[in-house]
Length: 447
Image (cartoon, one colour):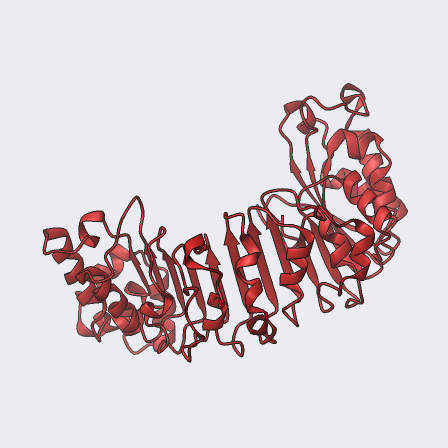
């Protein structure tokens, strides 16, 4: 192969080679050495040992310092696109140790860095110490553990310009620190931020950020918000989400059931400001749908049910009289026998979505020990196909239906229809309906 080929073509070829082959190729000539560098040094990972992070001049520390010096060199650092730093185990880092200072200095040399992920394992390090303010190409920053701003800090001119920011395993100040006046959000540039991911296992949860509403209101370009907390209630969820003015994608994952709170009921929710008027996609608990579906929405709204059953979803929508006309895509979870074979709740549920064009159904086995409304031994391929075909004809505008089977019992898997069998049943009533089965761990609806 001629070396006169365009560099773009050579890059495509080298991307297909394993790392060992690249290491051999770079020894052929200076041409191949320079050509292989972007592929070899695209990703930097460091999982330092406890001996290298405690400081001093031990052999592990010296080896790590030599490695960091190599990666921060002018020949290597410009090629790094992604960086992962992970402290594992019970490691107590010293902020003044040679390794920590050298690590942060090395990251600051990655001038073309696109993605930075750091797991601090509770290590108390302030975000400005990462020295990312000069990384002009940084698009994604994810921090897991460690405080990012202290309660007594004032807002700073230091701003991080990234499109995606994640802060999980959030460090909550100790009671003796006093109430926080500013959160880590004040460190982010509101003009560039598009996606925000927050998560904490601490019961204080969202209250850590509620004192910084002025900063949240400035994120007028933020479109996607993902929240994972141990517990919260309607009031805290509402107070937090409503502070962001332009949310379109909302993902809520609460480890404990979300309730209206001790002094609230569903009727009182009607007095709250609509949660996100520009919302296009929601994935979260059924209990929060009264907040999500309030107010005006775009014509096409995608709902993905997280937790709960089809019956619970139906009861919530009927009890709160939610307006479901804007929903065009729906992803729900159902039980094979209780929801499909006998209970009419699924039929009544789908009838509430007159403009539904896409439907994704996650079918699982019925819970062990619960009363099954139909007798499993009487079910068959034909019976399941007929029931599903009948269910799919309820939404008048339905165009696409995707099924994902996650069955725990062998007898359930034995009676599932094939996609050809189900398609034949549905086409008799709705020839334009497209039916498919999904085996992916995730799909466009968020399963």
